[in-house]
Image 1 (cartoon, rainbow, N blue to C red):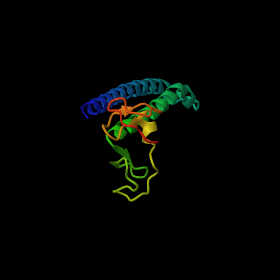
Image 2: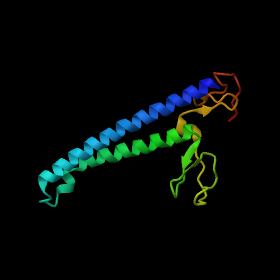
Image 3: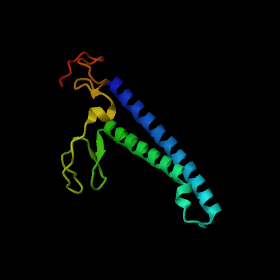
Image 4: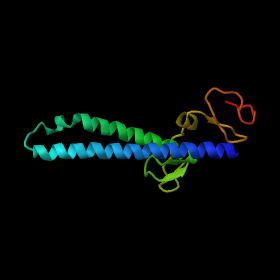
Length: 139
C-alpha cells in the first residue's frame, strides 16, 4: 500500500507543479495583454483582434489547468459537482450540497490507467494483472 500512496503523492505533486506553472504563464500573458491594451488606449474598434493570440493561449492554458485539477481531485478520490462545483466523493451519484444527479466519471480515463482493487497501485490501461501484487484485474 505504501507504493500506491507514494505514486498518488507523486501524481498530486506533479499536478500541483503544473498548476503553478500554468498560473505563472497565464499571469505573464495577462500582463502582455494589459500592456498592449493600455498602449492602444482603446482607440480603435479592432482592438480585440490584436489580442487574439494571447487570448487563445490563455483559453488553452485554462482548459489544461481544469484537466489537471480534475486529475488531482480524482487521485484524491474526489470530483467537482457539475452544477455547484462543490468538491465531493468521486463515487457520488448525487451532490451532497445541491442534490444534482451526477454523470458517471471514467476514473481510468482521467488518471490514465486503473487502480488495483487489492493493493491500490496505479496500473496501465489494458493490463490484466497487477504488476505490484499479481491480482487479476476484472474489466
